[in-house]
Image 1 (cartoon, rainbow, N blue to C red):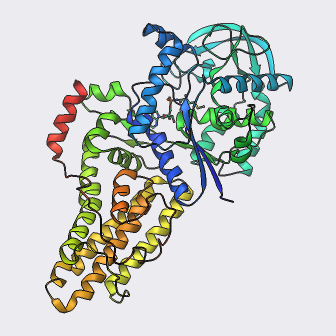
Image 2: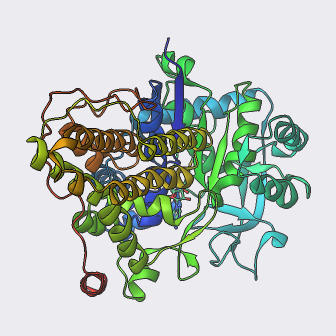
Image 3: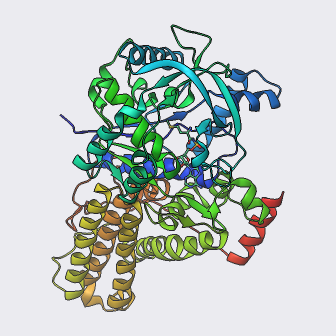
Length: 527
Ligand code: MSP
């Protein structure tokens, strides 16, 4: 039986203004999901939208629409963006899907029946945009510590979840499973900022919020959005539904990939809910860093103010989805924050995608066409020192890519892949195939050189495929390979079939005039 791999993104707040920053979580999850599929695993990759709460009602009202009508439109926009970026999710869950709503109601009732939820009254400081209650001491300069906006005093009858009784259990979870929450710095944050000061019970229902899932046994209350949202990871698999075979097959999740601002919900509240329900916990939570713009979390308004375009739709249309995806792997050191700028994006496009990968492929393909009519030949054994060194280098980096992807480090993995392309370009400069071609007695040597290069392109493109499926897909197809086949022959220079002809391949990443593109993007940002 195939090994299963269940990966999730957070469910997104529906928006037609998702930025490159939002795209980050789904782009890295897509690369991880594709990489695991290429390893032959049975992957289930979940994303979706988080559609309840006061904020949605307010936005719908501002747009002059009923909530559901408003949501249906913008959820389509969200899906459209994932399509543009080639996000290969297996399921898209909406928290307004009726199977989800019913399953959440049942979870709430179960928690109540087990004594983990009780009725009380809530007085507190509430941040409407974040849908979070805060204590005075948690505020930063009197404002919401997550988004920096105003909070207001609110009091209402409410149900509470006994989060306070889970502190020790969560600490034990972190101690016994040091890789449960990564990067490790996030564990200290959770322990020092939330668990050690003492967890408070969590208010989990509202009477003032109408746009939500009603509590089954007390319908004037709606369920707090996070208690509605977090279980999406199991309701999507049929938990509490008519058919829970997917739940039995895929749960627990191998990894929940999330941004650092929502680690608290995933590494404290979610495990506590699962413990209360007597369900297995996810194997890992990875809290990635943010894409920053001018030192702050990237947002559309900030970037357009500074005259830079960070709209992933526009950037994909102009420079390809692969280029947009690639900048995200490289500019955010995995686990930390990273800065975005148009100039960095365009510079990387030229240096890595165009000059390095694109150029390696195009010069190798043209030489095979020019000297051998595009036919792939059997190369001789790797007798030359340069050939051996190239093979050794590639072997080492292939191993690195697999090691890095075990811990989902997409930044180091893509760096290793590009080291392979750089090394192949250096090899070309060293062995000078155009000079070898001038000597008719050296035809076999020329064949070996070009075969080596095609094999490196094959191996590198196979490895790069999960990260940049469009361009590498074209290269693999031109090499007569099935781009979706599982990894094979990555440790040998004998993966291509001799006698086959190379397919046609246009320019993968046309070199850009950076100054002209910066001007173009600045006009688009301001339009
Ligand atoms: N709806 C909640 C999640 C509920 S999960 C049960 C939510 N949604 S979100 O739309 O605000 O965020 C979706 C993802 O986008 C999160 O992982 C978030 O961290 C990510 N990003 C949004 N802006 C970002 C950056 N500037 N940089 C990197 N990722 C950030 O939170």
